[in-house]
Amino acid sequence: MNFGESLKNEILAKPIRERHCKKAFLAGIIRGTGEIYETDGELGFQFKVSSEETAMQVSLMLKSLFNYDVREISVSEDRLNAKDKIVISVSGQRAYDILLDLGVLVEEENDVVVSLKFYGELTEKECCLRSFIKGLYLSCGSCTIPSNQTATKTGYHLEMVFSHYTPALETSEKLAEFSVLTKVTRRKDSFIVYIKSAEEIKDFIAFLPAPLSVLKLTDTIINRDLSNNSNRQKNCDLGNVNRQIEASMKQIDAVEKIAEVIGLETLKPDLRETAKLRLDNPDDTLIELAEKLKVTKSCLNHRLRKLVSIANEL
Figure: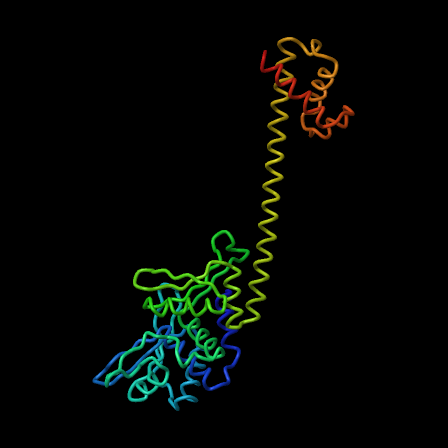
């Protein structure tokens, strides 16, 4: 089970007890993937959920809130995510009453229209707002985080997909009121509220709240940071080794050039001693050479630079 699935399971595992919060949750579910249709002059609506657990919970809420027994359930193929969706349909006069009660339909000047305003009386209480966002995320949200197997391919990403810009912007602004920072973008015919920061995803999950998922994400962040720091240290160490090897080869080439052209015996005693020691110990670091010569590292560096300078002149 990936992180996104475990997050949704945690949301479902915590029961919603208050009637007003149940209505907000159900409204979020319907708002996320709901479609309104008309068949033979009769109004109906349907919405998709990703798991049997979600379908069961939604069915129980429809029964307890509106005394509606769900009978129309089908399966829709989701080719993009390679996972089927469960479609729940509600039709007849009861469908109209439910949509009106949940604020999806509103009466305006002797007419009934679909409201694109997601946040109003139904989400005035903070507990109801959290329940609404839970339902919204369950129906149109997803989350991926890095794992040990996919760390090089997958980053941190959480998103919710909307069919209209207004509710996407409203949702982003509403979350910002609780210090959950998101961005809004367009993807083909959809509008996406998304987060790509690990810490801000953690803020979103804490807002729901889903404490177990917060702990899992925190653990991933810590382990990933430790791994990145370790890799940076390894890269730094490797870089130092490579520079040492290049410097050593340059110094040995210089000494061999001097020996070939004018001979090491023409050098001053301190330079001659250094040159011979460098030739005899090609793998030694500067510190190791300095200890053998019983001089400082700075003094050794000066001698080696002088040898390279003499070779360059030759």
